[in-house]
Length: 371
Image (cartoon, rainbow, N blue to C red; front, side, top):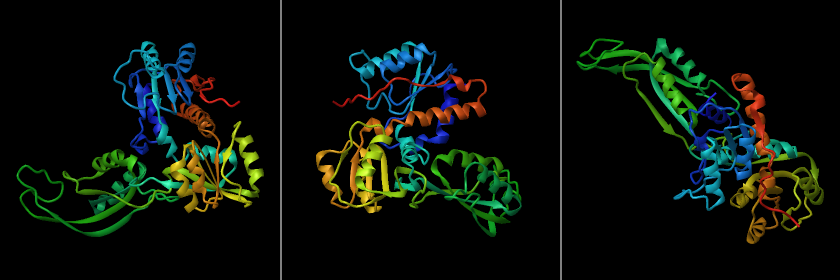
């Protein structure tokens, strides 16, 4: 398998098109066409992680956080970022990151937190905008089923828990080809009327290239008439954070102790206790202060995230409990998620690269210690 094949597998879990604009995801270092000898999965790419990859003969590091976040003007080894990049290049090690793409994934970072905490009835806390597209195309009625099925096969017509969704209108289309045309129906230079079906489907934006490819490959006309628009509908499965419910109501202290133990953190910073039961909980891995208002609006009894500043705790406004469990602690299980996903995928689809060559980094990359 090549690096690009591993990236294609990872994009099934977290398409890079859902990365936030400020982020730097994708292949950061290395050759996309290089053959993969082994994969090392980590939360962060530090020098010690690159050394581990060298030792274990892994020439691809799959890192949740990107080691290169802003632009590099020099690579002289003066900073930890430059030293990591230097060493990776020297030893032909590729580095890939899916960061906020995985944050926005339905089965990503926040789903993992919900899983660990046992939260049920999950939904996206802040749906990402402009992620749903709509295709309208016009097909000879005899070919409509073939085109429709091809679009369904590549992800078209999926809405929430339903598949193969479309709307179809029968009508009559007209066209006249010029002297350079080669019409499938009618004759060049003559106006032709054809019984056609207007097919309308919605699709997630990361499927657009495959949708168009399927359309062009199955549509019989020389010139395919179609239009694609971006919808304002909220996407039920793409976005930041999640909200779910405990099966059993907890009191605040019971909740905080459970949180501390389950998330393996030495410290939980929290807002004022309100003497209210905890049932509905919002979570957001990493820095989540921007989602406080969304958590309140969603009716959360508690909001779990990290990196809250002093004044952020006031924003709870005695309406919910805010709990800061630490940045690393909120994302610590992410590398397990990536490791498990890749092992299963490679076992099923890539026998040329043994699943045993997908390794979980043993390095603790948490830069914060507690006294």
